[in-house]
Image 1 (cartoon, rainbow, N blue to C red):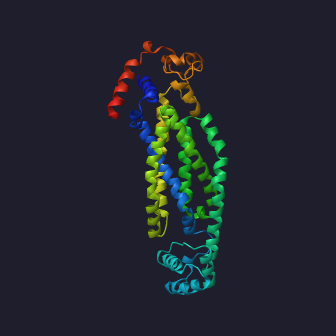
Image 2 (image 1 turned 180 degrees about the vertical axis):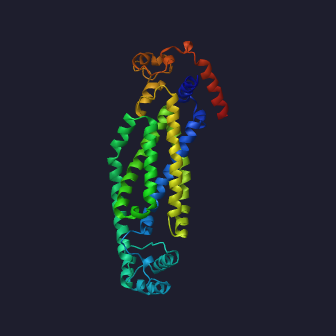
Image 3 (image 1 turned 30 degrees about the vertical axis):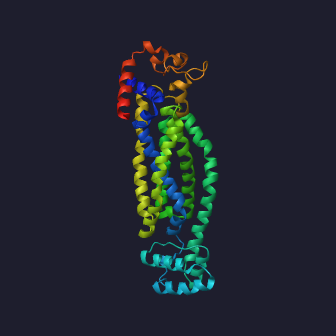
Length: 352
């Protein structure tokens, strides 16, 4: 039946050649999911200061809302910055950007003092953004460290599809916070978004490593993991063009809206994994332990790494009623051998 075919496919993928594994739908889906999520993470880390500077914080004045901030004041900014010793060209460019695009983007540091000298409201906006940037710089590493245990606990106690769902949900929630619509633009809500982002980042690496090991075993894990991040790294070359596009548009709203839509679509990956688990006979086991049950390398603790995934599970067949009944039989007696051979031939043809 379909359950036996799926079980045979999973067993074969764990011992299949690298070329077969990398061309399987399991690896392609995993790679696309990881690459897009990693682009989301690195794009936000690389542009968080610009995004926060562009946010219209409630009850905080910004240069874009100051009626006296005009093109004429941009010329005056040039003269003032010469006196205070800041980079005048950059200041004028940003001043004109705020004036023409109305993005609410402010400047920080010495440039903020320029706006104070002009009587503008940019200093408070810049200070709020600077404070949030400093908070993010602390929350990201410390939050990632604090989230290590929750991520591990989820992988230890929940099915892989549930862990993937929580990862995808964290990406979706962070995308909503990054949109900063209405009350979400407040500094307090942005801090909550930082905490969600810390979990999201920590969960991505732990969950995807578990996914690759669970689906393909450990024989080619290093090559598969490296290939996955080569593809992800190539996609991350798009960060610089996206940042330049946001500066041209004067806002990250369009990019964040696209990220939100992609995060919603990627939720489907966890539902696909859940559908696969419904056909699997080991769904009652947590994600981090399923590999110990159906992966042939861990089949026998008496002789190390077993090569026969069926005969090596003879002791597991007696202890776990959910294990496939053929796992307790020798390979020659398994009724799913014919299906397994057909699956092997099909996968090899796809790889070629």
